[in-house]
Length: 287
Image 1 (cartoon, helix red, strand yellow):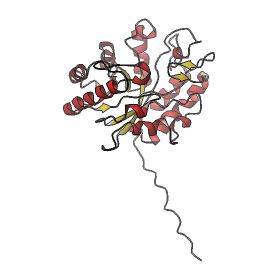
Image 2 (image 1 turned 180 degrees about the vertical axis):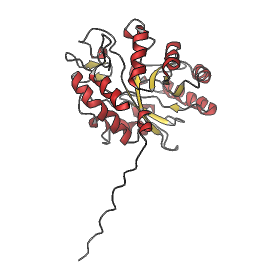
Image 3 (image 1 turned 30 degrees about the vertical axis):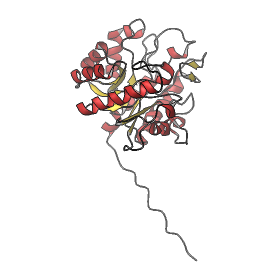
Image 4 (image 1 turned 90 degrees about the horizontal axis):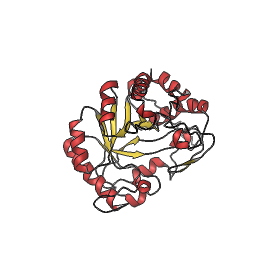
């Protein structure tokens, strides 16, 4: 009788804690001065105390000011021409971690040279990554919500950006590697003739509205602030364990007082500028 040899022991490679800390980021809207981001000093101080080292935002002066005053690095979302984005990134090279292509062009309908989705955003992406690569500035892909296959193939990016929201479910659900998962779709946007890119989750997270589920990109069930605090460490640690280089939660602040709109309740700081349990849990984990 033949017995198969036992499988080799599973090897778990230790990784430095500093690498995990560097993998955590938060989306911000420092240019939205008519909402809570207009309370600049309070918001800045809360960010500085959180231990978070990366923000994702447009490349504007208030975001660069935050970088200077807190030491965070910016993942800059492209919204201008490739030449303009290159010029800004070059001037602010010490503040920028990477430049990301258009954000969700399949729903926000950005155009380039008179062309809409998918041809315009694809041309913008490929031109932007070509310029960034030539300048030695890290480039991440555009992200999409529903129409990944139409914008493919995107060329030249070192990181594939994707948005693994769990939709109110436990955080592991956002990272499940099923056939149609956001992670796999991010890989499929790339050019098959190029090496596989690294991964960066430039949006993710939970809203805490108990009265609404409609969000910009569809429907997401809300959870309680307490559940958000329980889920957050698991969410970031699971992404790190799957070798996602950086995971950003959307977003830092609850923007307005209206709790019936889920878009106002994605923050880890509430609309009265009080840290939610998620802020406290993440800050404790990072320290």
